[in-house]
Length: 491
Length: 140
Image 1 (cartoon, helix red, strand yellow):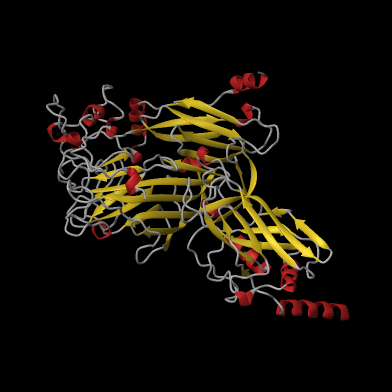
Image 2 (cartoon, rainbow over the protein chains, first blue to last red):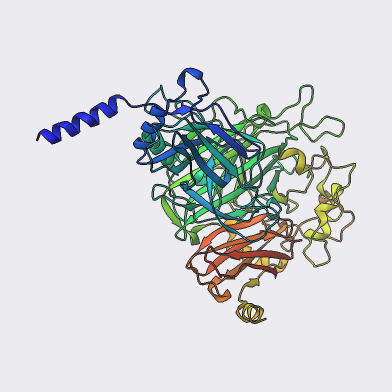
């Protein structure tokens, strides 16, 4: 009994003496860092060697660090998910009896990548994160609280280091062969810089359970049961390209066939685990708006079964990582994978002094808003329920109250003028649809220019008699299309 | 030499589908996703007088999709992998990834590619020492 009370006393003392995680002064730059463990970002917080020993004991014989991944977008890297690959990491401790290096390290995630100038892929530890998020830890005194620290790096230090004279962490990121695309491009490193913090056990657990950016990263090999990630990602049309959907918004009246009333680029990724869909991501941009009407644009992924999910949507201001007012927005989806993405297209994309955006011959071009959507499904969905691309991107025109879909899709909105309409073809008196999907190289026609005038090969292709040129959209009439290429709009 | 023989004998990646006409047929069986639908109008096609849509009626033979469906079946074990889990990447000639992940059996992959795409490339690799690393072009 006495021993038990003594043990409890020791534990309580340890808890009372708990030290909070500390952001260190040195950073990782250009993929390499030499981090002095006794110098904090804020001088008053600099750890003592006694503190280091406390951190080591708190983490059961390991020094654990957090890295704030800060990477330029490469491959499928994005604000919500980015990563680096660890080539080397070790702690050097100098004591009166000599210098020791501890080089046994691990992280919660790995991947299989080829290093620069190599094509042979091998397993490497990674650190994955996101950008701009505020971590909410248990203590506001922790430097992790309110920070954007991401993944962890643990180094085994089995020896007591309370008599250390100096201690440092050396980190080197792996330069991957980015010419191979993903996964190498995703797990590369750019200039950085990356901040580093030394972690208490509770903050280590917090960050590893939060696992920033992990759920959207490709080819994650989880080294922890805490992490549940997709085994694989299917991308449509691909992880680097977009569908471009364009509309005539005069439905049910015939339009002018310029197919530029609203132009949106989008792509969709399905995260698969154990042959079932567990998550979905979508990304896209407003490209052009050649309409007097304003619209709401929805993205509906028509799974063949009912789905429910937690969904988060981000809408970014053009060319910026800053979101528009009211975003990010999380919502619960109870029946369908469907979200209102762009509300009020006119307010989202306009050029002062011009009626339209990116469809007038002599007007300047502007970048449009960007969206990302992430859905995590409550119950995994059988892969057989994945619908065929290009899905159901649809428009609600506020003045007419009409929904406009790609042919074959029923109405979705209870409040639209054509709600419940049996006509799911959405074709005009000439037999043309009101919505078309093109590859991303397609350029929108100038205002009131017939699509067949902007692309003289379109009609012969569309006849489907085999005489058409499948690459018709690569030969626009330069004077009758708006030169807003994908390199510009997918900022 | 033996290695290449094994690869060629075990090559069972199958590319199928893809033509515009096939796309029309497929879409007709799955109308909820189609962008190629039979017009409900009674308009009759006429001899084209211009390239403008306004001057030409579209009949039910018209196609408006610039993409085609393809199916790939990939069985990594047929390539001599000893690993239970094999990493597979499927991508286009311009480097855009269509599929990236680890699989434990046969992968059935539905692709939806621009009509101008005629091939995809498959990488297969594992973390087991001695396993092959495959890069294979597949003509669609």
